Length: 85
Image: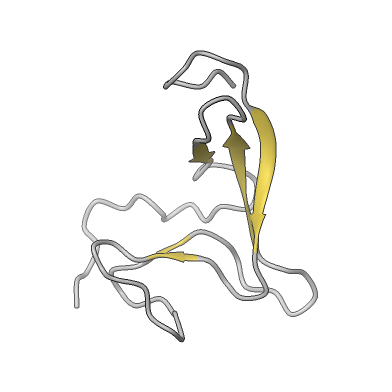
């Protein structure tokens, strides 16, 4: 993938965690982060594998692009009518 910021080639990478990964829209991070109805789940929960999300890393400008349509991403990530709490 070509970096949209600097035009250099990006390398495939994986963001990994010991817990499920969430993107909380417009909310500050919490100590015990967990998703709510307005959160986007970036990884699937599994008892046997560490959660991860496929991404692309640009070593030149330090940007990361997360592939929301990748193999591990959930299909309902970009739903238009998300509930908000």
